[in-house]
Length: 250
Ligand code: PEP
Image 1 (cartoon, rainbow, N blue to C red):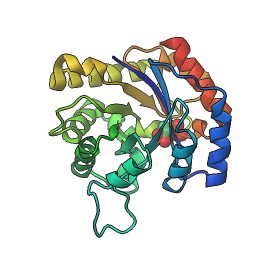
Image 2: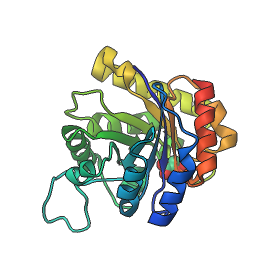
Image 3: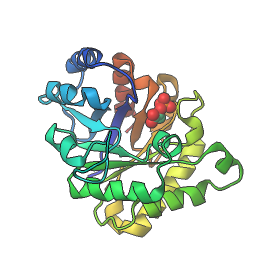
């Protein structure tokens, strides 16, 4: 069954104290719903506290990155086993900031995707073109390459795609519903080509400057199966409002 997600990527924000206040705020508002899911991706230091606090709530927990190995001499890295141990379910792989600031390429991203699946974590594979690539009509070729290389060797449909145009992340300029519609349709076709009928259950989220006043028109677009929200997820009541918008559109 296709599910619709609202995910909040906090990036490098919030201390443990702030995280627990946020969890407290979510408490009263979110009810279990088999079609919709709300999840939060805190920084590593706050992950365990958040996971423990929301364990009995219908809120899932994700990590913002991971290494593909289980252990080893990789100073500063976190392994899939470590994430599993504290109750993490999802992991962002290939977020634009990882690709562009930390120079992660499709080969490395693919290793992480495969490792996440092998460890029964659900990878959220983030893809998207830069402004320059869009302007030179390379959007589809970039997306195709990111999907094909990122999902190389993947046989399961237990992953999520987040289409996040680089030019829309943290800029205040979101993709228009029409721009997003075109790319999401293209992604859906690529997934169908690779996974056949079972690809219909793969959720494709949109991310990039989602706000309360633009999310309604994005969420109603076919093949937009939810949102990955950065800045606007930092405020708990805004995040809840976005979740309500998603539920009203699907
Ligand atoms: C993100 O971090 O994935 C993101 C989409 O950020 P923002 O919503 O702030 O553009």
